[in-house]
Length: 492
Image (tube, rainbow, N blue to C red; front, side):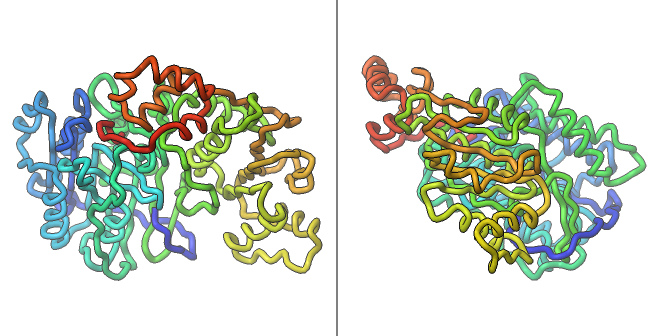
């Protein structure tokens, strides 16, 4: 989540706290000023109240140490009214005031932050949390990255923080009606503290949506509550490593498409321990997506997952032979979603670019310390890459391949820790995932995102003809669609 460098790796110091010296900022938002963003049926407010109850009733944290910020749906107003704790609206102004005028002045052992509501991730990989007063014209939000930096600086007295975030991490670029400038609250920070520790538990990886169950509770929050309830009452705070493992197991058993959470923690002096690598620190050069919407390829994405689990080399090919079916977009989506699984990095190579060997060695020189393949022949440099690459599983993506034989000298040894994904219009003699046109329904969904849902609904038959005219090929739909977009879509 941070982009800083942390030179040494060590065990995290044991975290202990007294309940009476523990504070909590607890947020649950299901009603937004932009009403189309409301969480249908609710869930976040109940999850926030359950977490507050665990802190106060189960762990003995004084009620006066809790700031409860809720924005319930009209039908859930009774939940907050029955709560014994004072409740304020979860607007950006209120949250900013609490952080800077109350929490910043408190002296204690531990701060809990619990957040349930909408979220997104920017093209710069920044996590943003939408506040209750967010609208299409003003996306009021908190920059989680800079908030964590503030908490770990000498501006903040409480040195230990546990943050539990049940929010989506949908890509900002995928959201229709988005403003050109996102804005939001960027927190100023002081000097890094040498004794600060943070534990951050996130419901989703990049690009994922945090699901709400039919019981009106977030699947993630539900798993967190269950894990916390099972933690020994005499230990405070609970061992978050054990809690996280239980959460991951709980999510893995649910029939849904939310990938189990990743988490990490670190102290500002460099102490750091990772049990699921933070993707922001994994070396990569994955291109940003140019797609406005990812539709009709969910099943293909699952098939690609399976192929790469079973094979060292996999190809994405085009059954139409014309291009524009979304091969590269599918590979980008897979790479971002699975970056945390490739600790050795993701190296994206363009077969139409400069020499592939040069691209390989430059990636290593840029991203790895003590990587010096110069002075060797081209073949020697390639072999140097395979022997001196950063440890961990690696994904190599060869894009725009027109002749598979031309990339043969640049393929890593088989049955190694390197996996290869080839993108080509041509037949490739490896296990392949063929892509063709979208289904008519998916093509209409993409067109609706480009032209506006209301327009497509009014001229549905013409829209169908238009999709069929371009063969339901994504690039054809982009070429014929006006790029004006209309608001009305929920950001998560």
